[in-house]
Length: 164
Image 1 (cartoon, helix red, strand yellow):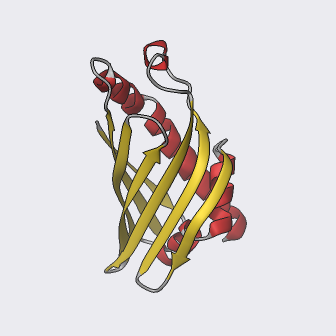
Image 2 (spheres, one colour):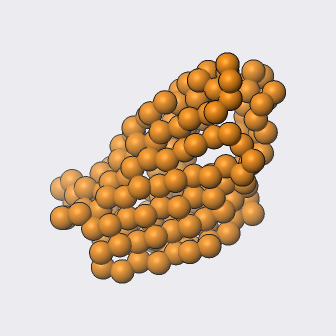
């Protein structure tokens, strides 16, 4: 399952990468999304790259067929790696879900758009469970992942409006 979403922020690329690689902003974004036990394991940026590693506990409302093989509460470790790419930034992310047969990764980009920045996230997810894994990944792609991406974009907008 692969899903791509874009969102435009009313801020420059430099302002967006600055808050995406700011430990306080990352913590507040996840808190705003309802995640808990947030730990910033690594958060650093220079002129040409950024690396952010976080751990957090996330609750997901699973459909009945998925509850038999997945837990609704999971610890996720996410690694975001960004690099400067011309006037913008590109990157990759990986999400490890502790104890779950789930693989999640993807790409990210920040591109200037007038006075704003377009943030595009493409997510790929695999659920390694016989018979229902594809059905779970399909459900996540239609429900949970779009909702999570929108919550992240909204939290980013809130941060930018209060700190920009």
